[in-house]
Image (cartoon, rainbow, N blue to C red; front, top):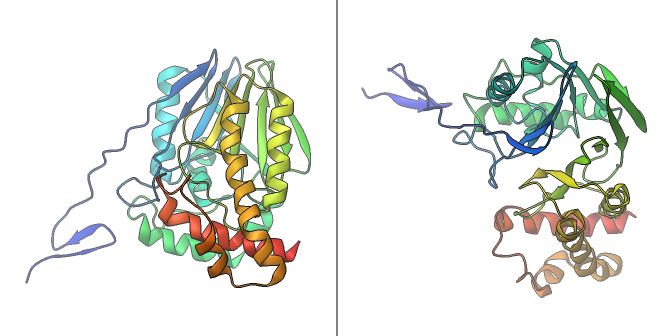
Length: 307
Protein backbone atom coordinates (compact mmCIF):
# COMPACT_ATOMS: atom_id res chain seq x y z
CA UNK A 1 0.00 0.00 0.00
CA UNK A 2 1.36 3.43 -0.90
CA UNK A 3 1.59 6.34 1.46
CA UNK A 4 -1.00 9.13 1.41
CA UNK A 5 -0.88 12.84 2.14
CA UNK A 6 -2.92 14.46 4.91
CA UNK A 7 -2.50 17.97 6.38
CA UNK A 8 0.86 18.37 4.67
CA UNK A 9 2.38 15.18 6.14
CA UNK A 10 3.08 11.96 4.28
CA UNK A 11 1.84 9.01 6.25
CA UNK A 12 3.94 5.89 5.89
CA UNK A 13 7.00 8.15 5.65
CA UNK A 14 8.53 10.88 7.78
CA UNK A 15 8.19 13.94 5.56
CA UNK A 16 7.50 17.62 6.05
CA UNK A 17 6.94 20.32 3.44
CA UNK A 18 10.10 22.20 2.54
CA UNK A 19 10.49 25.45 4.44
CA UNK A 20 11.45 27.88 1.69
CA UNK A 21 10.02 31.13 3.06
CA UNK A 22 12.63 33.75 3.92
CA UNK A 23 11.85 37.04 5.65
CA UNK A 24 13.98 40.00 4.58
CA UNK A 25 13.57 43.13 6.73
CA UNK A 26 13.64 46.36 4.73
CA UNK A 27 14.87 49.51 6.46
CA UNK A 28 12.57 52.47 5.76
CA UNK A 29 13.76 54.96 8.40
CA UNK A 30 16.75 55.20 10.78
CA UNK A 31 15.28 52.72 13.28
CA UNK A 32 12.29 51.27 11.40
CA UNK A 33 12.03 48.09 9.36
CA UNK A 34 9.32 45.95 7.82
CA UNK A 35 8.83 42.60 6.09
CA UNK A 36 6.55 42.38 3.07
CA UNK A 37 4.10 39.53 2.55
CA UNK A 38 3.22 37.99 -0.80
CA UNK A 39 0.31 39.37 -2.90
CA UNK A 40 -1.44 36.00 -2.72
CA UNK A 41 -4.09 34.09 -0.86
CA UNK A 42 -2.78 32.33 2.23
CA UNK A 43 -1.69 28.74 1.70
CA UNK A 44 0.52 26.01 3.10
CA UNK A 45 3.06 26.86 0.41
CA UNK A 46 3.47 30.46 1.61
CA UNK A 47 2.92 29.71 5.34
CA UNK A 48 0.17 32.39 5.29
CA UNK A 49 2.83 35.06 4.67
CA UNK A 50 0.44 37.43 2.91
CA UNK A 51 0.58 40.48 5.20
CA UNK A 52 3.27 42.85 6.40
CA UNK A 53 4.77 43.33 9.84
CA UNK A 54 7.15 46.04 11.01
CA UNK A 55 9.30 47.00 13.94
CA UNK A 56 11.07 49.96 15.49
CA UNK A 57 14.32 49.57 17.42
CA UNK A 58 14.56 51.79 20.52
CA UNK A 59 17.29 52.07 23.18
CA UNK A 60 15.08 50.08 25.57
CA UNK A 61 13.61 47.41 23.33
CA UNK A 62 11.90 46.67 20.05
CA UNK A 63 8.27 47.52 19.26
CA UNK A 64 6.65 45.29 16.63
CA UNK A 65 3.49 46.08 14.68
CA UNK A 66 1.54 42.94 13.73
CA UNK A 67 2.61 39.34 14.21
CA UNK A 68 2.18 37.72 10.76
CA UNK A 69 0.02 34.78 9.74
CA UNK A 70 1.60 31.76 11.44
CA UNK A 71 3.76 30.99 14.47
CA UNK A 72 6.54 29.84 12.13
CA UNK A 73 6.67 33.24 10.46
CA UNK A 74 6.70 34.99 13.84
CA UNK A 75 9.69 32.89 14.93
CA UNK A 76 11.48 33.90 11.75
CA UNK A 77 10.70 37.57 12.35
CA UNK A 78 12.02 37.33 15.91
CA UNK A 79 15.18 35.77 14.52
CA UNK A 80 15.61 38.55 11.95
CA UNK A 81 15.14 41.20 14.63
CA UNK A 82 17.89 39.52 16.65
CA UNK A 83 20.22 39.84 13.66
CA UNK A 84 19.67 43.61 13.62
CA UNK A 85 19.71 44.44 17.32
CA UNK A 86 20.46 42.80 20.68
CA UNK A 87 17.41 44.60 22.10
CA UNK A 88 14.54 42.35 23.13
CA UNK A 89 11.05 42.65 21.68
CA UNK A 90 9.10 44.35 24.46
CA UNK A 91 5.80 45.25 22.76
CA UNK A 92 3.58 44.13 19.89
CA UNK A 93 0.78 46.34 18.59
CA UNK A 94 -2.02 44.53 16.74
CA UNK A 95 -3.46 46.63 13.92
CA UNK A 96 -6.56 44.40 13.83
CA UNK A 97 -7.55 40.81 14.61
CA UNK A 98 -7.47 39.21 11.17
CA UNK A 99 -5.79 35.82 10.89
CA UNK A 100 -2.93 36.90 8.65
CA UNK A 101 -1.86 39.50 11.25
CA UNK A 102 -2.30 37.62 14.54
CA UNK A 103 -1.56 33.89 14.25
CA UNK A 104 2.05 34.63 15.18
CA UNK A 105 1.19 36.39 18.45
CA UNK A 106 1.84 33.36 20.64
CA UNK A 107 5.54 33.45 19.75
CA UNK A 108 5.87 37.05 20.88
CA UNK A 109 3.93 36.25 24.03
CA UNK A 110 6.32 33.36 24.66
CA UNK A 111 9.35 35.69 24.69
CA UNK A 112 7.68 38.12 27.09
CA UNK A 113 6.42 40.90 24.82
CA UNK A 114 3.40 42.91 25.97
CA UNK A 115 0.55 42.92 23.45
CA UNK A 116 -1.56 46.00 22.68
CA UNK A 117 -4.82 45.97 20.68
CA UNK A 118 -8.07 47.85 20.32
CA UNK A 119 -10.87 46.82 22.68
CA UNK A 120 -13.26 45.64 19.97
CA UNK A 121 -10.81 42.81 19.36
CA UNK A 122 -12.28 41.06 22.40
CA UNK A 123 -15.50 40.54 20.46
CA UNK A 124 -13.61 38.82 17.67
CA UNK A 125 -11.65 36.56 20.02
CA UNK A 126 -14.86 35.29 21.64
CA UNK A 127 -16.71 34.87 18.33
CA UNK A 128 -17.69 31.73 16.48
CA UNK A 129 -16.13 33.32 13.38
CA UNK A 130 -12.70 33.33 15.03
CA UNK A 131 -13.09 29.75 16.22
CA UNK A 132 -14.16 28.43 12.85
CA UNK A 133 -11.48 30.41 11.03
CA UNK A 134 -8.78 28.86 13.20
CA UNK A 135 -10.18 25.36 12.64
CA UNK A 136 -10.09 25.94 8.88
CA UNK A 137 -6.63 27.51 9.03
CA UNK A 138 -5.22 24.45 10.78
CA UNK A 139 -6.13 22.55 7.62
CA UNK A 140 -5.49 25.20 4.98
CA UNK A 141 -2.10 26.29 6.34
CA UNK A 142 -0.89 23.00 7.83
CA UNK A 143 1.61 22.25 9.21
CA UNK A 144 2.55 25.89 9.85
CA UNK A 145 -0.77 26.59 11.57
CA UNK A 146 -1.77 23.53 13.58
CA UNK A 147 -3.35 22.24 16.79
CA UNK A 148 -0.74 24.13 18.83
CA UNK A 149 -1.72 27.47 17.26
CA UNK A 150 -3.98 29.56 19.45
CA UNK A 151 -5.61 32.98 19.51
CA UNK A 152 -3.91 35.35 21.92
CA UNK A 153 -5.61 38.15 23.83
CA UNK A 154 -4.01 41.55 24.34
CA UNK A 155 -2.41 42.51 27.63
CA UNK A 156 -3.52 46.11 27.14
CA UNK A 157 -6.83 46.94 25.46
CA UNK A 158 -6.95 50.42 23.95
CA UNK A 159 -10.11 52.47 23.68
CA UNK A 160 -9.51 55.46 21.41
CA UNK A 161 -5.91 56.61 21.79
CA UNK A 162 -2.82 55.47 23.60
CA UNK A 163 0.72 56.86 23.82
CA UNK A 164 3.46 54.32 24.30
CA UNK A 165 6.96 55.49 25.20
CA UNK A 166 9.77 52.96 24.89
CA UNK A 167 13.34 54.13 25.29
CA UNK A 168 12.35 57.75 24.72
CA UNK A 169 10.63 56.92 21.41
CA UNK A 170 6.94 57.81 21.31
CA UNK A 171 4.35 55.65 19.57
CA UNK A 172 0.97 57.28 19.03
CA UNK A 173 -1.59 54.48 18.73
CA UNK A 174 -5.08 55.50 17.67
CA UNK A 175 -8.31 53.79 16.77
CA UNK A 176 -9.59 54.64 13.32
CA UNK A 177 -12.31 52.02 13.04
CA UNK A 178 -14.75 50.74 12.36
CA UNK A 179 -13.12 50.79 8.93
CA UNK A 180 -11.40 47.73 7.43
CA UNK A 181 -12.22 46.00 10.73
CA UNK A 182 -14.14 47.06 13.85
CA UNK A 183 -10.89 47.33 15.81
CA UNK A 184 -8.50 49.07 13.38
CA UNK A 185 -5.50 50.74 14.97
CA UNK A 186 -2.76 52.75 13.31
CA UNK A 187 0.62 53.52 14.85
CA UNK A 188 2.47 56.77 14.20
CA UNK A 189 6.12 57.23 15.22
CA UNK A 190 6.81 61.00 15.01
CA UNK A 191 10.57 60.75 15.47
CA UNK A 192 10.73 58.43 12.44
CA UNK A 193 7.91 60.14 10.51
CA UNK A 194 6.60 56.63 9.88
CA UNK A 195 2.99 55.48 10.02
CA UNK A 196 2.00 51.82 10.32
CA UNK A 197 -1.41 51.84 8.62
CA UNK A 198 -2.45 48.20 8.92
CA UNK A 199 -5.05 47.17 6.37
CA UNK A 200 -6.32 50.70 5.92
CA UNK A 201 -3.87 50.85 3.01
CA UNK A 202 -3.27 48.19 0.36
CA UNK A 203 -0.65 48.47 -2.38
CA UNK A 204 -0.14 46.28 -5.43
CA UNK A 205 -3.21 44.08 -4.97
CA UNK A 206 -6.97 44.26 -4.63
CA UNK A 207 -7.92 45.18 -1.04
CA UNK A 208 -9.82 42.73 1.12
CA UNK A 209 -13.05 44.47 2.09
CA UNK A 210 -14.88 41.63 3.83
CA UNK A 211 -17.39 43.08 6.28
CA UNK A 212 -15.67 46.45 6.36
CA UNK A 213 -17.34 49.77 7.02
CA UNK A 214 -16.40 51.36 3.69
CA UNK A 215 -17.62 54.82 4.75
CA UNK A 216 -15.55 54.66 7.95
CA UNK A 217 -12.60 53.38 5.95
CA UNK A 218 -12.67 56.40 3.65
CA UNK A 219 -12.72 58.68 6.71
CA UNK A 220 -9.72 56.81 8.13
CA UNK A 221 -7.72 57.48 4.96
CA UNK A 222 -8.33 61.19 5.50
CA UNK A 223 -6.90 60.83 9.01
CA UNK A 224 -3.72 59.25 7.62
CA UNK A 225 -3.21 62.19 5.28
CA UNK A 226 -3.75 64.62 8.15
CA UNK A 227 -0.77 63.12 9.98
CA UNK A 228 1.40 63.79 6.90
CA UNK A 229 3.94 60.97 7.45
CA UNK A 230 7.02 60.64 5.28
CA UNK A 231 6.60 56.87 5.09
CA UNK A 232 3.51 54.67 5.27
CA UNK A 233 3.86 50.94 5.90
CA UNK A 234 0.64 49.31 4.66
CA UNK A 235 -0.81 46.02 5.79
CA UNK A 236 -0.19 44.59 2.33
CA UNK A 237 2.26 45.66 -0.34
CA UNK A 238 5.36 47.80 -0.54
CA UNK A 239 6.00 50.75 1.74
CA UNK A 240 5.17 54.21 0.46
CA UNK A 241 7.25 57.38 0.40
CA UNK A 242 4.44 59.18 -1.44
CA UNK A 243 1.53 58.55 0.93
CA UNK A 244 -1.02 60.88 -0.66
CA UNK A 245 -0.43 59.37 -4.08
CA UNK A 246 -0.38 55.77 -2.87
CA UNK A 247 -3.38 56.08 -0.56
CA UNK A 248 -5.32 57.27 -3.61
CA UNK A 249 -5.49 53.69 -4.94
CA UNK A 250 -7.26 52.31 -1.87
CA UNK A 251 -9.52 55.38 -1.70
CA UNK A 252 -10.38 55.17 -5.39
CA UNK A 253 -11.21 51.48 -5.18
CA UNK A 254 -13.50 51.93 -2.17
CA UNK A 255 -15.22 54.91 -3.79
CA UNK A 256 -15.79 52.94 -6.98
CA UNK A 257 -17.26 50.02 -5.06
CA UNK A 258 -19.70 52.37 -3.37
CA UNK A 259 -20.50 54.25 -6.58
CA UNK A 260 -21.12 51.08 -8.59
CA UNK A 261 -23.24 49.38 -5.91
CA UNK A 262 -25.16 52.30 -4.37
CA UNK A 263 -28.10 52.62 -6.76
CA UNK A 264 -28.82 48.91 -6.88
CA UNK A 265 -28.46 48.59 -3.10
CA UNK A 266 -30.82 51.49 -2.35
CA UNK A 267 -33.34 50.49 -5.03
CA UNK A 268 -33.17 46.84 -3.91
CA UNK A 269 -32.18 45.78 -7.42
CA UNK A 270 -30.37 42.45 -7.79
CA UNK A 271 -26.69 42.54 -6.92
CA UNK A 272 -25.69 40.38 -9.87
CA UNK A 273 -27.10 42.84 -12.38
CA UNK A 274 -25.24 45.74 -10.79
CA UNK A 275 -22.01 43.76 -10.72
CA UNK A 276 -22.24 42.71 -14.35
CA UNK A 277 -23.03 46.26 -15.46
CA UNK A 278 -20.01 47.75 -13.66
CA UNK A 279 -16.74 48.41 -15.46
CA UNK A 280 -13.97 46.60 -13.57
CA UNK A 281 -11.31 47.07 -16.26
CA UNK A 282 -9.14 49.29 -14.06
CA UNK A 283 -8.75 46.51 -11.50
CA UNK A 284 -9.23 43.16 -13.22
CA UNK A 285 -5.54 42.70 -14.04
CA UNK A 286 -4.43 43.12 -10.41
CA UNK A 287 -3.46 40.30 -8.02
CA UNK A 288 -6.42 38.79 -6.15
CA UNK A 289 -9.03 40.41 -8.39
CA UNK A 290 -10.71 37.07 -9.10
CA UNK A 291 -10.43 35.97 -5.49
CA UNK A 292 -11.72 39.13 -3.83
CA UNK A 293 -13.47 41.62 -6.08
CA UNK A 294 -16.92 40.06 -6.40
CA UNK A 295 -17.07 39.39 -2.67
CA UNK A 296 -15.93 42.95 -1.95
CA UNK A 297 -18.65 44.39 -4.17
CA UNK A 298 -21.33 42.19 -2.61
CA UNK A 299 -20.34 43.15 0.92
CA UNK A 300 -20.40 46.85 0.03
CA UNK A 301 -23.82 46.32 -1.61
CA UNK A 302 -25.12 44.84 1.68
CA UNK A 303 -23.43 47.43 3.89
CA UNK A 304 -24.96 50.33 1.94
CA UNK A 305 -28.40 48.84 2.55
CA UNK A 306 -27.62 48.73 6.27
CA UNK A 307 -26.37 52.34 6.53
